[in-house]
Length: 420
Ligand SMILES: Cc1cc2nc3c(=O)[nH]c(=O)nc-3n(C[C@H](O)[C@H](O)[C@H](O)COP(=O)(O)OP(=O)(O)OC[C@H]3O[C@@H](n4cnc5c(N)ncnc54)[C@H](O)[C@@H]3O)c2cc1C
Image (tube, rainbow, N blue to C red; front, top):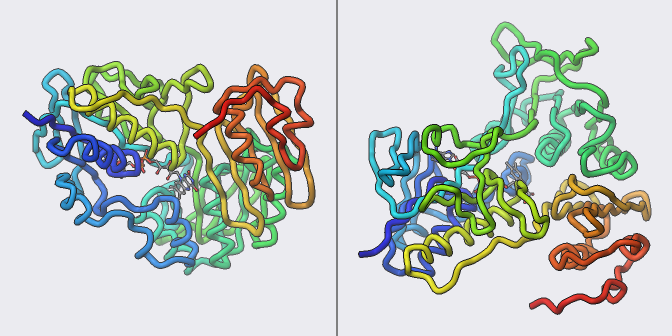
């Protein structure tokens, strides 16, 4: 009898698992469940749509025909509200029961709301889905003034959208620099200047005490904890994600306090026949030698593929097991210079950094003398060599100058292995 694989979530992790399973087993039953009303689209590109720079068409990755051609049952607008791991059953909000041999949880996260008065007012946007992007585009097109909250990789997208849509904005940050866990003030200043050029003004040591609203419930501004007021008819909030795992309450699947799902390096959870992939995993990172988290498109795709391979393997239909071993990268394309972070730029016990010009800067994060991540601004050429050093866990102690050389010479770090 053919195995039945059920995947919850049609983001890049879930979809890539479905594709991998089908490639490995032509006979398997594959069901993909998603609460969204559209099949997989490119979440990375929805910001370009919201900026008004890209039409909707190219953002879609798979239409429903893609699933039909592969004999994958896709159920749109289907929210999973419970899983019984003993009975091997999944329950949907429509009252359907779906049995599984293997189950993949790839439900990602939902943006967190600020716990302040009026945080659900009209005109305040969170950014995760294509639906959000449509609302953000509309909102920004009709706004003159804005605020952005959340000094990280998603917050900067909202700031760039304000810039592109001619919304004069204040970008309120808790600390003294954008993404202060990954960049020093010197590196962040390059970003601050680029924001200012787009009429987005960084405001440091700030935040939101409350949103101000008019009689119709639409935002008119923000008051920060010092009582300073900023006018805004548009607000973008990106302060983190709540992992979509509440529906697993009582399932016995191990989760952390923040709701992410604990897996090993094969994307297996602690529960038999249950796997997890994508943003919501707290996975064993073989390169770090410890559990880690990673919210990036490429790593979600790879985790989905690893999970799919192992789901098939565990049903006796595959040739080989697979292990997740990956140095992720995340790039920002909003400015005149390129920006890329890789690996775990906010981890490490040490870092080295250098500014090369007004818009060229590099930082490499190290843990126990090994490269674990970094940030490159302006010149991305060193990325492949730095990622190779991270993948091969080369001891780079005492080689700070070599890591910061304009052109990295890998021979300085021998012995290194050849990679395919
Ligand atoms: C605006 C934006 C810009 C980004 N830019 C970049 C970038 O430049 N580079 C980069 O590497 N990464 C970027 N990311 C992050 C990247 O998109 C994510 O890391 C990736 O999409 C995670 O994929 P996933 O499959 O784990 O989760 P998701 O894409 O979140 O997919 C999970 C799916 O599961 C569905 N779901 C949730 N709960 C249920 C349920 N109970 N029942 C049914 N379905 C459910 C959700 O609706 C969703 O469709 C960006 C993200 C956003 C929002």
